[in-house]
Length: 190
Image (tube, rainbow, N blue to C red; front, side, top):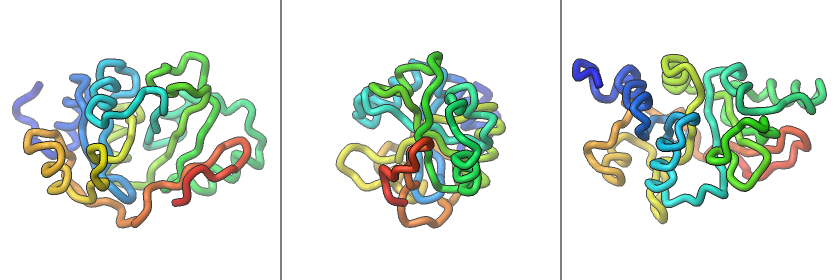
């Protein structure tokens, strides 16, 4: 790793991600922990950190819809369904899409679908663009503890050495809403 990179910077976080490690970063409402979605090693580290079973599946957060296309199959969507989705993106709404057959089970878990979001958080956009792809995204908190809303809270839960992108959350009180891309069914209120 390049030792000249400033901890807390996007460039530093990208280097950590390339080394198949987990990082924390601010999102629309809370800090998230994330990693390279294409690295089974990194995803397993994230799952172990969160004590989360792989069967539950994960969310990808991206700078653009194009970054999500390698992972999801949007061929079944009608024009009206697309309009509904793109009317909320970029923004704090996560949609569950059918997954491509090539999408890794460490992302989809027991499902044939994948939850994805195009963010409107400027720092996450910068991070995903610098990394060149989406990130796995789940709330930054250890099991049983509330989600972190600041860098200080991340350090308190995960330790001083945990790589955190410095920044503020988007100020939302609730985590992202989650909806089914095909049916519009709401799985989680935002």
